Amino acid sequence: MAALFAERHRRLAEAMDRCGAWPGRSPWVREAMDAVPRHLFAPDRLWRPDGGVFAPVDREVDVCRWAEAVYPDPETPTVTQVVAGREAAGLPCQGVVADMLDALGPKPGQRVLELGTGTGWTAALLAHRTGPDRVTSVEVDAGLASAAQKRLETAGVRVAVELGDGTAGHPRSAPYDGVIAAYAVDRIPWAWVAQTRPGGRIVTPWGRLGHVALTVAGDGRSASGWVRGLARFPPARGTRPALEDFALLRAARPECAERSWERDPGALREDRHLRFALRVALPDVRIAARADGPGEVTAQLHDGRSSWATLSVRPGQAPTALQGGPRRLADELEQAWDGWLEAGSPDLHEFGLTVESADCQYAWALDQETGPRWLLS
Image (cartoon, rainbow, N blue to C red):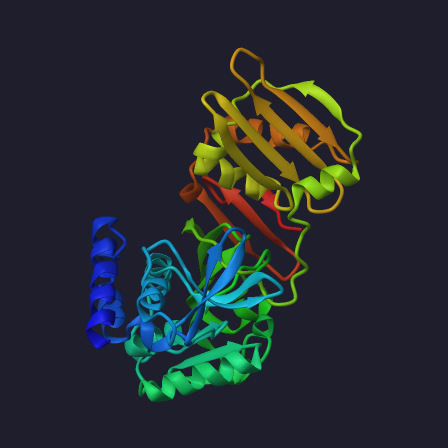
């Protein structure tokens, strides 16, 4: 069995090599992942997507499939907990974790706060870098916290796992040299800034689409930094899920208006930089695009509450838009798209985030002082 895990670990490491996911300036990340392999922190039951639902994968039933789930490709997470049919916790994508650890840049002896312990794997990687008793990890789920503490102790890793709401950080052990979150937030909790020393780093998934690396200002009164890359993490516990079923929302509001549409909806499927820019400008709007056949594309938009739109193009026909509900989402999308084009079509790495207080936070593109900005609501 050890040979099976070693082989899967090797394959994942080689896949990281092929896609350039190992951070060149942080060789310690690869060393830590070799020293603290994923399977040591995976529960006996995992979950895999299967036709729109999650199906269990049990170690005792099929250890080979279980090992495949633990060691997927660099951009696929391992789901370890499902609540109400939705992913609630997991071992995050190895490529994303490597990038986030590189962005955090912890050094031996520094103090790090992790928010969202999950299985305990990321905390163990941090402890391998910083040393024993330098990492505090906060987990809101008592069962996850207890299980993670046991895995860390079994692996001989000394990390303090605390039960609590990560939104409040953990003031008792502050200040920290770095803060890293394992779940997505739409706004940065001010406690994270207040508990990080000036010059320290905050790395977190943001907006459920990308992850950002912020540096706390010298006076400790703000934090700012750039988007690092795309990442999808579960939201914080207690976040109200939006209505994700477009068909149900459209059926509830069938009245609609039709208008012409001058852009190719296929760009919403193919251009990740455009998708990111639209997510920044329209944070509550979900956009999904699909190819229905040669030259056929359909894009569906909804706000999770009461408004929807459909953009479609068919061979030999001009693209059209249908939109229903109190908001005109196709119009809003067009305005946001225009803004992105007028700014020079910046890619996702040219976006940043600034936190000036709990109430004043904004995203920006190209330049923090002179570029376009969007207040976070």
